Each structure stands twice: as structure tokens, then as C-alpha cells.
Picture 1 (tube, rainbow, N blue to C red):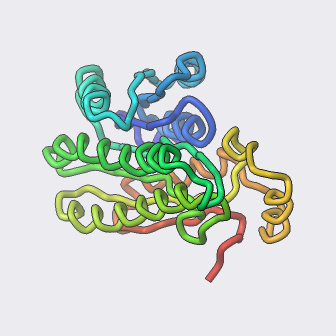
Picture 2 (cartoon, helix red, strand yellow):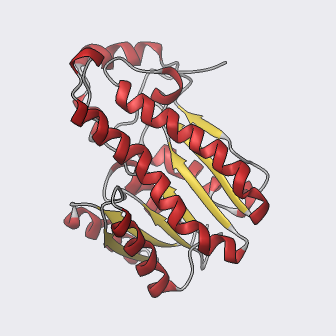
Picture 3 (tube, rainbow, N blue to C red):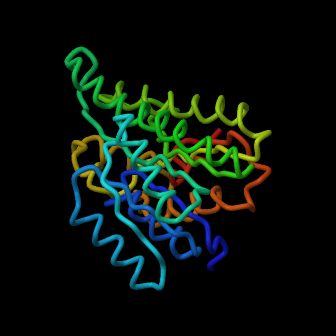
Length: 249
């Protein structure tokens, strides 16, 4: 399974949930993984310990990926430590749910910054190194909310749809330089984030998902690892839905 041995990845928001699963999956493929976190130092340390216990190499780096200086430090520390950077997974994100007319400006701004601006900043920071290598993989973790919308999540849906647009536009710009950009769009996944959704919405979602269950982070991570691999070299600007069949053409 160590098909990416020697490569280096940054996974933002990797201390828990989908980010944690992605970090562990990439490590199992032989990737040296930077586990980025903002405030959950103990959780990030647990992820690194799990990577190292499996003969992988992990490194926790604190950085607020909505802040340009933090992002620059994150990337530079990675390069100072391992000398290379092949993969960026833009996973960091938050929710601040409310009905549109009740949504506060601060909640709109916070979600746009965490879920969309962070991907812009991180992608811009890693590109010079990837361009110099003529190789790179950027995988953005979007959401079905960005494709189908969701009640009470106009800020989140707007950010994730923006991330999908960023994915497609950036892919057109950098493919000639050997850099492949794609996205995954998970549906409902059992994480801490989803625990906050109201009971009626959970019941409705389980009814409309053909598999009649929510996904797990471990079902998202292998798809991200594949898109981060050389095997995905002819998949450009694609958005892979991973949703148990919720949204089908």
C-alpha cells in the first residue's frame, strides 16, 4: 500500500474527522504527512502518534490557514523539514448554521474564510514549489452542500460551491505545469461537525440516501489518496461525489 513512498503532503484541519482519516490514509500509502491544526494540539499529536506507530512519518504544525503569514510558515516549515512538497489537501473548514435571514455577518465571513479563503491561501503558497518540480497534487474537500444546497447553510454552501469553482479554474491554469487539481464532495459523514444537525434533518437525510446511512471518514480518505496519486494524472478539475447515492444525475 505504500504507493506514494517518499512524497510529502500537507493536510489542513487534520486533527479530527475527515482530515484525520485522510492524514492516516496518506501515511499508509507511504506519504510523509504534515498534520495541520489550529487549536486542537492534543488531537493533532494523537494523529501523528498513530502515523508514527505504523512506521509512517508525521509532523503536527499549528497554523490558522485563514491567515497569510501562518500559511507561509506552514509551507516553509514543511519544506525546511522534508525538503519537498508534493500534495496539498485543503480540508480545513467550519460551519456556522442558521436560516438565511437570521444569519449574522460574522458567521458568513467566518465560514467563507475557513472553507474557501484558506484553500486560496494554501494553494497559492504551495504552487511555486510544485511548479519548480513540474509536479503536484491539490485535492480540495468540498461538500454536497455546494452542489445541492442545504437548509440553514447558505454560507457553507456558498463557500463549498466557491471551492468547486476554484478547483476547476485552478486546474485549467496549472495542469500544463504538471499540477493536478481535483475535489471530493462528501455527503453526510459521521463526524463531530454533523452531530450538530437537527434531528428532523438527520431523519430526512437518511430517508433520501439510497444506502440509508451516513458515510464514515474512512470511506472518504481513500478517494482523496487516489486523487493525490500519479494514477489520477488524467483526471483534471473533477468533483467526485461520495454520498451514498444521495445526489445522482
